[in-house]
Length: 291
Image (cartoon, rainbow, N blue to C red; front, side, top):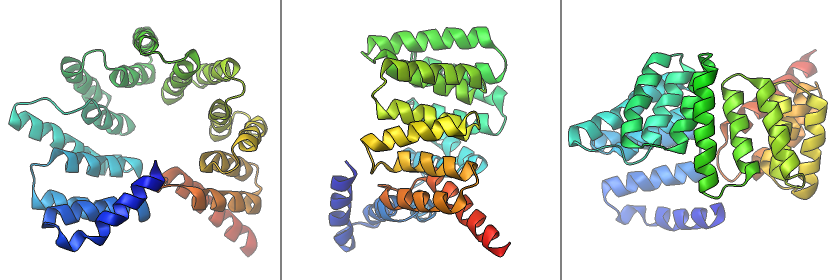
């Protein structure tokens, strides 16, 4: 509900001079989240952390913002700080993402041993968490421990089914696990299965299309799926991003740039993937003009 959220954010922003220093900083951060960039968000979040170093949520959001920017090394100390604060308080983290976000950063920087140790601790605080099982499956696949991965995946499926997830939903997430674990054939198979279970769902079309394009498996087929999704939802910025990225992969830089600019204008909040794709297309167009 981004439209409503932005409306209320602006109402708060107009009254920020009436707030306490900390409230004003949080309001400035919320405004940056909706209307500026993560770099402005980080500036306000750091001010919040300097104002009160016992605010685990501020440190978590700082880490997560760096994570979204794919600056995993900078994210790690902030995520670790959250766990340190909770340990000092003698309490467990407020949610599983305090573990899994740090786990993602460890994973992306090749710190698998620390990641595995972290998940052992997370199991004690959040047993049978599907988000944790997801990360454990990815880690196992990345280490070549396929038997362990299968155990985590089957447990994940069981919990999601108990929570009334559809088979298509479950299968689409399993596809992401295999993709992150670098098993592209299995990932594509799962994305295909999810689409076959819901052949008229544009989300399933875009999921498969995006995978085929981003992993350079079948760009032409990916674009076909993106076009079908856009026929059903022409204003969806994610589907436009998929199409623009596919055109870029085909070397159609000017056409890709136009589509990606449209995607950027339609996004509800900052999206780093779209930003990177747009910058790549702009550079390619500029380089071709110079030639």
